[in-house]
Length: 224
Image (cartoon, rainbow, N blue to C red; front, side):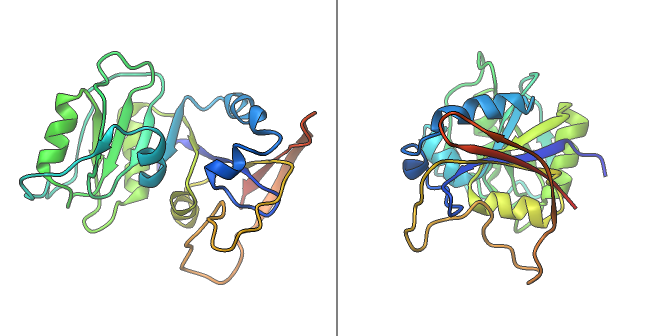
Protein backbone atom coordinates (compact mmCIF):
# COMPACT_ATOMS: atom_id res chain seq x y z
CA UNK A 1 0.00 0.00 0.00
CA UNK A 2 1.31 3.41 -0.93
CA UNK A 3 1.24 5.87 1.97
CA UNK A 4 3.33 8.66 3.49
CA UNK A 5 6.00 7.98 6.09
CA UNK A 6 3.97 8.73 9.23
CA UNK A 7 5.37 9.95 12.57
CA UNK A 8 3.21 10.39 15.66
CA UNK A 9 4.67 13.40 17.50
CA UNK A 10 3.25 14.33 20.89
CA UNK A 11 4.19 16.22 24.01
CA UNK A 12 3.29 14.42 27.24
CA UNK A 13 3.71 14.60 30.97
CA UNK A 14 5.90 11.95 32.59
CA UNK A 15 2.75 9.85 33.11
CA UNK A 16 1.85 9.98 29.41
CA UNK A 17 -1.07 12.43 29.55
CA UNK A 18 -1.58 14.94 26.73
CA UNK A 19 -4.18 17.51 27.86
CA UNK A 20 -3.06 20.70 26.10
CA UNK A 21 -3.82 23.02 29.01
CA UNK A 22 -1.60 20.83 31.18
CA UNK A 23 1.28 20.33 28.72
CA UNK A 24 1.36 24.10 28.07
CA UNK A 25 2.48 24.51 31.69
CA UNK A 26 5.28 21.93 31.59
CA UNK A 27 8.93 22.83 31.35
CA UNK A 28 9.89 21.82 27.85
CA UNK A 29 6.79 23.08 26.03
CA UNK A 30 9.09 25.59 24.30
CA UNK A 31 10.94 22.62 22.74
CA UNK A 32 7.84 21.12 21.13
CA UNK A 33 7.77 23.16 17.91
CA UNK A 34 11.52 22.82 17.41
CA UNK A 35 11.34 19.03 17.74
CA UNK A 36 8.33 18.92 15.40
CA UNK A 37 10.15 21.01 12.79
CA UNK A 38 13.18 18.70 13.05
CA UNK A 39 11.03 15.79 11.88
CA UNK A 40 10.83 17.40 8.41
CA UNK A 41 7.12 16.54 7.99
CA UNK A 42 5.46 19.47 6.14
CA UNK A 43 1.98 17.91 6.50
CA UNK A 44 0.31 17.40 9.88
CA UNK A 45 -2.75 15.43 10.88
CA UNK A 46 -5.08 15.82 13.85
CA UNK A 47 -8.47 14.52 14.90
CA UNK A 48 -11.80 16.35 15.13
CA UNK A 49 -11.43 17.39 18.77
CA UNK A 50 -7.97 18.90 18.27
CA UNK A 51 -9.18 20.52 15.06
CA UNK A 52 -12.16 22.02 16.86
CA UNK A 53 -10.05 23.34 19.74
CA UNK A 54 -7.09 24.70 17.79
CA UNK A 55 -7.93 25.20 14.12
CA UNK A 56 -11.61 25.46 13.18
CA UNK A 57 -13.83 28.55 12.95
CA UNK A 58 -16.78 26.90 14.71
CA UNK A 59 -19.41 24.16 14.19
CA UNK A 60 -21.03 23.35 10.84
CA UNK A 61 -24.66 22.23 10.60
CA UNK A 62 -25.98 20.91 7.30
CA UNK A 63 -29.51 21.86 6.24
CA UNK A 64 -29.65 18.90 3.86
CA UNK A 65 -28.56 15.51 5.21
CA UNK A 66 -28.08 13.86 1.80
CA UNK A 67 -24.84 11.90 2.08
CA UNK A 68 -21.89 12.03 -0.31
CA UNK A 69 -22.55 8.32 -0.79
CA UNK A 70 -19.38 7.31 -2.64
CA UNK A 71 -15.62 7.62 -2.36
CA UNK A 72 -14.37 10.90 -3.78
CA UNK A 73 -11.75 13.61 -3.31
CA UNK A 74 -11.21 17.18 -4.42
CA UNK A 75 -7.88 18.98 -4.54
CA UNK A 76 -8.75 22.66 -4.18
CA UNK A 77 -5.22 23.75 -3.30
CA UNK A 78 -1.79 22.53 -4.36
CA UNK A 79 0.71 22.82 -1.51
CA UNK A 80 4.02 21.52 -0.14
CA UNK A 81 2.25 20.64 3.11
CA UNK A 82 -1.31 20.33 4.42
CA UNK A 83 -3.08 20.76 7.76
CA UNK A 84 -5.05 17.51 7.65
CA UNK A 85 -8.08 17.08 9.92
CA UNK A 86 -10.10 13.89 10.33
CA UNK A 87 -13.79 14.85 10.79
CA UNK A 88 -15.91 11.75 10.14
CA UNK A 89 -19.33 13.42 9.89
CA UNK A 90 -18.34 16.86 8.57
CA UNK A 91 -19.00 19.05 11.62
CA UNK A 92 -16.45 21.90 11.52
CA UNK A 93 -16.44 25.31 9.82
CA UNK A 94 -13.26 26.86 8.43
CA UNK A 95 -11.82 30.12 7.25
CA UNK A 96 -11.15 30.52 3.53
CA UNK A 97 -7.95 28.73 2.45
CA UNK A 98 -7.36 30.71 -0.74
CA UNK A 99 -4.13 32.24 0.59
CA UNK A 100 -3.20 29.77 3.34
CA UNK A 101 0.48 28.80 3.49
CA UNK A 102 -0.46 25.35 4.85
CA UNK A 103 -4.00 24.76 3.54
CA UNK A 104 -6.42 22.38 5.18
CA UNK A 105 -7.26 18.92 3.88
CA UNK A 106 -10.41 17.45 5.46
CA UNK A 107 -10.97 13.69 5.63
CA UNK A 108 -14.60 12.62 6.05
CA UNK A 109 -16.62 9.44 5.61
CA UNK A 110 -18.94 8.96 2.64
CA UNK A 111 -21.88 9.33 5.06
CA UNK A 112 -20.98 13.01 5.60
CA UNK A 113 -23.38 15.47 3.93
CA UNK A 114 -22.75 16.42 0.31
CA UNK A 115 -23.55 19.94 1.49
CA UNK A 116 -20.45 19.82 3.68
CA UNK A 117 -17.97 19.10 0.90
CA UNK A 118 -19.71 21.69 -1.30
CA UNK A 119 -19.07 24.13 1.54
CA UNK A 120 -15.39 23.07 1.66
CA UNK A 121 -15.15 23.70 -2.08
CA UNK A 122 -16.48 27.24 -1.55
CA UNK A 123 -13.68 27.81 1.00
CA UNK A 124 -10.96 26.45 -1.31
CA UNK A 125 -10.40 23.55 1.11
CA UNK A 126 -9.36 20.15 -0.23
CA UNK A 127 -11.11 17.00 0.99
CA UNK A 128 -11.21 13.21 0.84
CA UNK A 129 -14.32 11.09 1.48
CA UNK A 130 -13.74 7.39 2.12
CA UNK A 131 -15.32 4.69 4.26
CA UNK A 132 -19.05 4.32 4.90
CA UNK A 133 -19.82 4.42 8.64
CA UNK A 134 -16.28 5.39 9.66
CA UNK A 135 -13.29 6.69 7.76
CA UNK A 136 -11.12 4.12 6.00
CA UNK A 137 -7.80 5.47 7.26
CA UNK A 138 -5.65 3.17 5.12
CA UNK A 139 -7.44 4.23 1.96
CA UNK A 140 -7.32 7.88 3.02
CA UNK A 141 -3.54 7.71 3.49
CA UNK A 142 -3.17 6.13 0.04
CA UNK A 143 -5.10 9.05 -1.48
CA UNK A 144 -3.03 11.54 0.54
CA UNK A 145 0.13 10.01 -0.92
CA UNK A 146 -1.02 9.42 -4.49
CA UNK A 147 -3.17 12.48 -5.15
CA UNK A 148 -1.75 15.10 -2.77
CA UNK A 149 1.92 14.05 -3.02
CA UNK A 150 2.38 13.89 0.76
CA UNK A 151 5.58 11.96 1.52
CA UNK A 152 6.09 12.67 5.25
CA UNK A 153 3.28 13.29 7.70
CA UNK A 154 3.25 14.08 11.43
CA UNK A 155 0.23 12.95 13.46
CA UNK A 156 -0.17 15.53 16.23
CA UNK A 157 -3.16 14.28 18.21
CA UNK A 158 -5.29 13.69 20.06
CA UNK A 159 -5.18 10.27 21.67
CA UNK A 160 -8.05 8.69 19.76
CA UNK A 161 -6.76 9.55 16.27
CA UNK A 162 -3.25 8.53 17.41
CA UNK A 163 -4.66 5.19 18.58
CA UNK A 164 -6.70 4.66 15.42
CA UNK A 165 -3.71 5.35 13.17
CA UNK A 166 -1.51 3.03 15.23
CA UNK A 167 -4.11 0.25 15.26
CA UNK A 168 -4.49 0.55 11.48
CA UNK A 169 -0.75 -0.12 11.11
CA UNK A 170 -0.11 3.31 9.61
CA UNK A 171 2.42 4.81 12.06
CA UNK A 172 6.08 4.20 11.23
CA UNK A 173 7.63 6.19 14.07
CA UNK A 174 6.63 7.45 17.52
CA UNK A 175 8.19 10.74 18.65
CA UNK A 176 7.54 11.73 22.27
CA UNK A 177 8.63 14.94 23.95
CA UNK A 178 8.24 14.23 27.67
CA UNK A 179 7.93 17.42 29.69
CA UNK A 180 9.34 17.69 33.20
CA UNK A 181 6.15 17.22 35.18
CA UNK A 182 3.37 14.85 36.24
CA UNK A 183 -0.33 15.28 35.43
CA UNK A 184 -1.77 12.60 37.74
CA UNK A 185 -5.46 13.35 37.15
CA UNK A 186 -7.76 10.39 36.61
CA UNK A 187 -9.46 10.00 33.24
CA UNK A 188 -7.09 12.14 31.18
CA UNK A 189 -6.37 11.11 27.60
CA UNK A 190 -3.08 9.33 26.92
CA UNK A 191 -0.93 9.48 23.79
CA UNK A 192 -2.68 6.42 22.38
CA UNK A 193 -6.25 5.77 23.46
CA UNK A 194 -9.01 3.40 22.44
CA UNK A 195 -7.15 0.49 20.84
CA UNK A 196 -9.60 -2.41 20.60
CA UNK A 197 -8.18 -5.33 18.65
CA UNK A 198 -5.67 -6.89 21.01
CA UNK A 199 -4.56 -7.05 24.63
CA UNK A 200 -0.96 -7.35 23.45
CA UNK A 201 1.30 -4.26 23.45
CA UNK A 202 2.58 -2.90 20.15
CA UNK A 203 6.34 -3.34 20.11
CA UNK A 204 8.68 -0.39 19.53
CA UNK A 205 12.43 -0.03 18.94
CA UNK A 206 14.31 2.94 20.41
CA UNK A 207 16.00 5.10 17.76
CA UNK A 208 17.29 8.05 19.77
CA UNK A 209 17.15 9.98 23.06
CA UNK A 210 17.83 13.68 23.54
CA UNK A 211 17.74 15.73 26.74
CA UNK A 212 16.94 19.45 26.51
CA UNK A 213 18.11 22.16 28.90
CA UNK A 214 14.48 22.45 30.03
CA UNK A 215 14.72 18.88 31.42
CA UNK A 216 12.36 17.64 28.72
CA UNK A 217 13.39 14.36 27.06
CA UNK A 218 12.77 13.58 23.39
CA UNK A 219 12.37 9.88 22.59
CA UNK A 220 12.05 8.50 19.07
CA UNK A 221 10.95 4.92 18.35
CA UNK A 222 10.33 2.91 15.22
CA UNK A 223 7.18 0.76 15.19
CA UNK A 224 7.41 -2.98 14.53
